[in-house]
Image 1 (cartoon, rainbow, N blue to C red):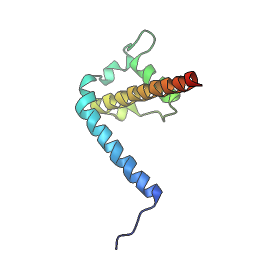
Image 2: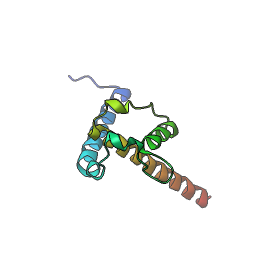
Image 3: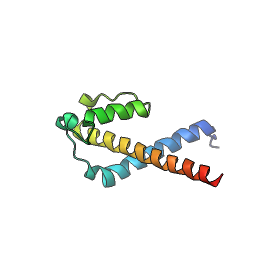
Image 4: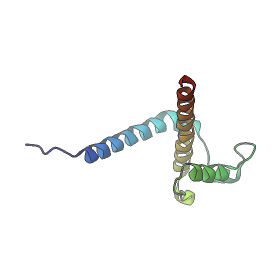
Amino acid sequence: MKELISPEQANEVLDKYINEKLEEYMKQNVLPNYNYTHEDLNTKVNDDETLLEFIRYSEFLFRLEEADLDQLTDEGLNMYVAKIDLMYAYQSIAEQGAYADIKEQ
């Protein structure tokens, strides 16, 4: 008879599965829209920031450990920037939901 797994183990399995599927989706559908190279780290990506400043500020904002960008391939760099962009999208959605909750009260 198979042994049942704990809720914590089930969450770990689901988290790993979701992360793998999300990464697969991003590589196929999102990553083609990103074409940064390490040379772009000192290039302005908006009026105020270089790509490096955008990454470091985002890591601070989302309490992420600083990535060792020198160790990333160009694909890895693009995947990292795409994930940061996704975090901003989630933050925006969460803020809109919180605003909607306030309006209903």
